[in-house]
Image 1 (cartoon, rainbow, N blue to C red):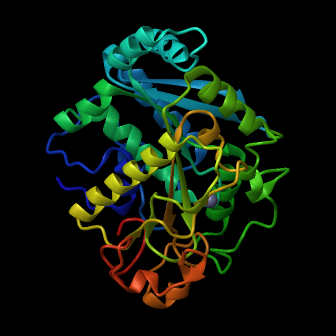
Image 2 (image 1 turned 90 degrees about the vertical axis):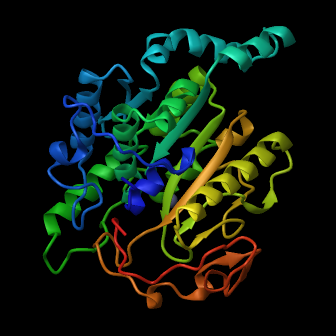
Length: 369
Ligand SMILES: [Zn+2]
């Protein structure tokens, strides 16, 4: 079945887009059976406790996933990471972690050893969902990502599982996401639906929690650095966000400027992977995807990965208008001036350009379209 859900595109663009004709094994719970709604349905957000319970339920029945509580957040909520790969790779997780640690440290590794690790090891991919808690799409996408990887047996998914170890942080700001979901559920279908939180969705730094990557002042930042970067040295880290307007989905290449201390090989790999993602999205008919606009790669405050050997992939999916309220979106919600291109307002998303291959279709717009 070709998946039609936009949120599924968000979930798996990292690996390119695929399709599956196979039903999941009977004992693997579907998201719909666990949450009671289709992920991405209007007015339905998944609570972090429900997300954590779902990942643990997958862990119970599948050898492809291990879920670990890797720390406690500022408000003493659990911070989870899910390790997902083939059953054989999961059985040998510690071995691959040690191999990658050696690869990451040339002081202890000869060129010959490095070459062997590159041949025999696995690509480590970190995925960070919804560090900005009001950007709810990525947290939902993480559910679908985990489900597809654990349940599907296509050559496409099996190839991903055989060659990579994916470390999914299902929620990079569990405290804030909890606040957002609780607030939304409290006021859904009232006149206050869609209203903003009256308090910060990270207790101390609010939206600036993703500018903490050179000061490391917050618990969530430190957990991520300790458990993802220091232990696993991922080759690729995907940060999934949502934005207010402009194109429907931003993917790399980033626009200038690039911070000159970033290794050029990381820059070209980010460009290459982003262009590949665009290739797959265009091939599947997803319109309104742009690159090389709006988002640069300058500040170390947002891009720890680039200083620690990882290719950074940022995606910015267009959020629904009017806050969290699922709504139909029209062209009026997305003026052409809302996409910056090389620092200036551009008619960008309404015109075909080298970095925008298909103009967005102004169809009804919600999580599922
Ligand atoms: Zn964001």
